[in-house]
Image: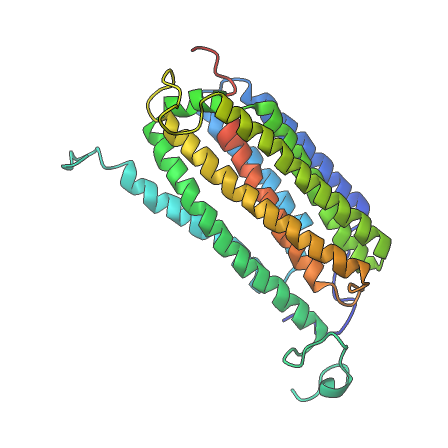
Length: 106
Length: 225
């Protein structure tokens, strides 16, 4: 683990930092609602997800303070999102390709 | 490693340091790591439902647009803002523990609980409207929506229902933290419980950050019916 001194072991962010993140999250929420009122065709979901991932990253890094945790904790946190992407990737590689070769039953 | 930086660690350690930890910092990191391992299992738990969402949305894209259009974007957006505010009060409660402000902990925990409850009240009105509008899957489901719309609403109730359950658990957790804060349990040296409870709260917020666009905003631009 990191430096093993007993107390004062954590970084304490300022109230201003947290309020700034809150303001950014409010802004991105209003932005995603506004953007969703327009039709960008295929890009609709990509834009919505890009904003959601930006918001989630801010929460994870600053509100949850992951940026100040040890590399081990960071790796575990990232692994969760990595494995869920593997789930989506392999899952959809099945469902999206079933029609390609006229497999019976589908 | 018989001797820690505090001299003989086995005899002079912090009263809240358990014997099997080398230091308070290691104990803190172990708590945070353990919570993150739990949150990873939560990511995978919700991930399965998001996978189902992805499969059926791919299969019935038009049903998704028209069903999503039936949801109330403004109530959904209001709830998103409520949760974002609750994440701010949550992080300020943890910070109050870090700087040793008991009043700050109590005030921010109460605000977090109130905002979490506000979310559930708004969700209640949304669910009630779905029943009134025949949007609950089953024999009385509306017939003018495309095939696959019942799947959308099944997933809507499944995802938001399980999320709401997490909110209830989170509020219970915060009530426990409130009692501990009132008893003066958290000090700048030791506040692991409120810290990792905060991680849980923020995680539930993150789930909603994805649920909001994927459920409410898919059909917001839709005009023709």
